[in-house]
Length: 329
Image (tube, rainbow, N blue to C red; front, top):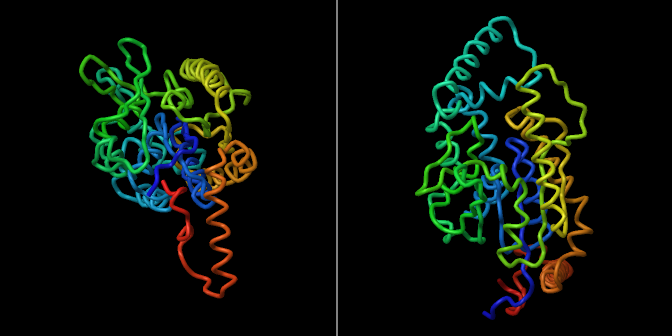
């Protein structure tokens, strides 16, 4: 088998909490279109979904795990679900409102005495459910997890070491999840410094970067009624400016329609996956135009191979069985 000599394509999956479920839909379409990804860089939710995919799970399996997790007692009784439901517009009866208020106030009180609202073991179990217990060097697709060192203020990119630990650090949203101590670093959410990790992918020597941004549109007219909402708005504006700088260097930008969904609102997971699929399909022309020639030839080879088998009357067989040795990765 000869070594692949074409240009490399990187996928930069951005952060955005629950909105990151859109990445699953994007991955589904890229697989269906036989678009070869040579490297994945992920920030926060992008690290979670990208890490699960690079670690060996198919988009279909990741989707199944999301639905199973959201229906599990572990999630329904979790602090994560309690906080997330605060941003869910669903109406509750009086008993539900009272119970929810008590639990929410208890969790908020925790933040006055501890580094995070969510229990660390609860979030660790979420990471373990989706991420394989392997080293980053063992992933089937080269993978980068982007984090931020709270001490130096610098971006930290993990290319080796524990996949679970790197993803956990990348997902450690300040205030919600405790930062991760590693050596001299105190690691937190990669979105603080790199919301969509285009530059991390570029620095890994890829030639084409497909970026997936799942941030909320800051042009939406927000409501400023509390100090928390004002503080959150300031953070969103800063993140939007940093994101725009990185996206300038992306070759293709995919923006699923996530609306104004809060990053902790789990009520629309299925809609988000469909939004990712729709956005990826709408971007296919730009993706194919940006792809280097060897990637296009692989896709054409597989398409014609399938067509030839169907014309011969077989109607079966896996795509790419007759792929030439020169084009195999």
